[in-house]
Image (cartoon, rainbow, N blue to C red):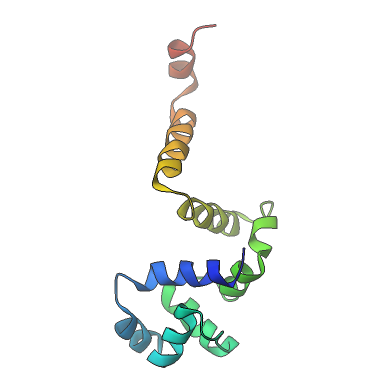
Length: 120
């Protein structure tokens, strides 16, 4: 993972609202946000904190993504683990997302139904 992954994750969250509206709501300079999202500059931690708060992410999450530390924290508590899974899922192609959904769906079927559909 890298800073670019962090930028992509933030871009995805900002896109529905638009950069200007998001910057205003987050209380960050629109130019600073644009420089961050475009890869021109990495913002100060104070700005990153405002962005995380506006998105609803835990403090420090953007830096975790940028440093790749979230990929090694699978054993962490459930909320952090859920963040890791969701972010990993979002990075997949649509085809791979559907493949993952089919795999997960097999685990959501009760055991007795699974056994009936796959006799040994």
